[in-house]
Image (cartoon, rainbow, N blue to C red; front, side, top):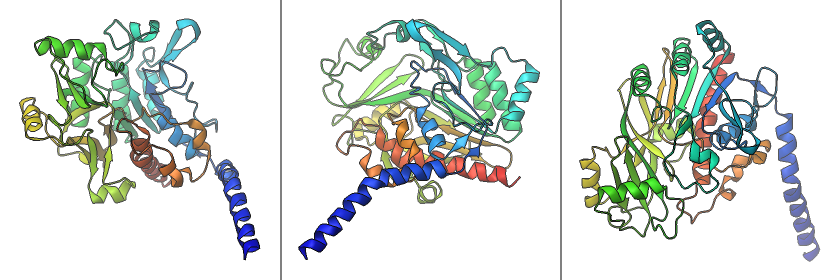
Length: 389
């Protein structure tokens, strides 16, 4: 009996040891699928491409490739800001395209994803001790050329994916309004983010401007030592919902109806701890998921005074015969994922190993539980539809 148990244990160890090899080989053997994609990221501070790496992870894991049959490169295959050594950079975008070139680009592409247009500011780029101080814009915001490309893609019923910060500053108010009219959306002007600790002596990641603006608007007071949700309006107003004082639960959650849980393989409820924007939408669009801030009576009154609905959209969809469009109401593509894991088949079956369970600020669980299945399903359905044409 002991010998049999030893043999079984030994076989189990061998299987577990070989599993990563099997998963890697299986991924290598998967056929590539050509999908011509334009990724636009104007906030790439490093070659790691933090603001679009999550999307590349999904492309690689599912073997979507460019027309050269190469997998998409995080550091090269996008439009926007490209960092170089010694604080040098170059920009590759659409500003030199004429109308004919834009039309040709739209004809060639299958889809576009605008991941982050917030841009690069002088203290982002040149300071080694940047703490969120306001500074001069180097590059960023949606341009009229990019808006024109979106309009061309829309007219051809190509897939369009956009997310926060597509139309917030530094995008001009005129371009923002045209984008809203084009896709039936309206930005409330509010953005927000969860911070796991608002004690300024402990958490050095709180932007300096958040502290300065709040004090300037609240009698030079900063009465926070717990977690909370910072809410910022484009006109400069700033409010904070404090855990226990204003909130029953610390972090916002993304809530999805059962029909969309089944459509996209997403959970009923998942926490979201990063930047979001409060968007409104016309009835011609479909809301896939909603943000819910679990506020108490005091928190409810603050949200009402700011004209912030609760709940409010987290993912907005228009996927009809006239055009195919998604707006993710948050910095969804910015997640700390390891690209090497994208090269293992069925790695998502082990997602429960990929994130801590006792950290309210972690973003890995959002990627594995929500973003990855959502994007994978959107891409799979769209790719399949192209193969039928």
